[in-house]
Image 1 (cartoon, rainbow, N blue to C red):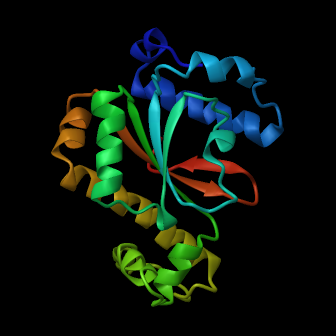
Image 2 (tube, rainbow, N blue to C red; image 1 turned 180 degrees about the horizontal axis):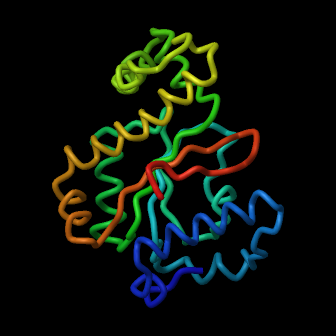
Length: 207
């Protein structure tokens, strides 16, 4: 599990590479065997996570498992549609500025119900205002050719990926702390799309 020394010695690129390799292990069923009983006591007094992941609440996206990470390795923020508000921003700022995390990963996923709800303009209680935060991503798919509906998986993926990009833009625009940390190279902010059917994480806009 992560120690202060381990955390200090990592770069954002190192962590991103570890996530890529961890997802490969997850896909092949060769995940890391961990002594969780030992980790419980070791992590009880302090923590030094290397990254923070903002993901959807979907029960089919267990973030630590998908990336093959252990106890104390990562912070995880979860909210329907992996949108960002001041509470999520504050959590991410804590993770990076105060606790030393060096990578912010925003991860959307296949068949996202929140994205489909935004496309369908669902209005139910407090869900409506949440889905409104996803709707800018629909406009980002103006060039999409094909049926623009929640029944078209290709269109849903377009909106989902652009929702990740929009969330990243919101993080940079609304958090001077995180923007400055990224500009100075202290952290990196990246996006990903998780395919439920393959168990694969696709990192967006990366070579």
